[in-house]
Length: 99
Image 1 (cartoon, rainbow, N blue to C red):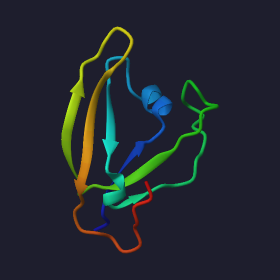
Image 2 (cartoon, rainbow, N blue to C red):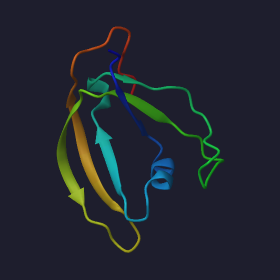
Image 3 (cartoon, one colour):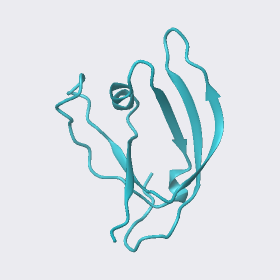
């Protein structure tokens, strides 16, 4: 069985591109305390702003989060949920936090 991982953007512009107009933006803090891999930047050609490089972080699926706050959507912004990473499941050999 291969462990699974969760990938998310750390570039706000790219995160907004991927979210729908009614989507929710997750703001995650505390990544330095959990298993995370930060791959090199790359361009994503199928997004509206192709010139903005994608910076993503790959997280262990066993990570726990605490909701710190929720900012409701306004006419000019999406709803934001601010999370703090508090720990991960089984640590995998070779993974290190690089956030």
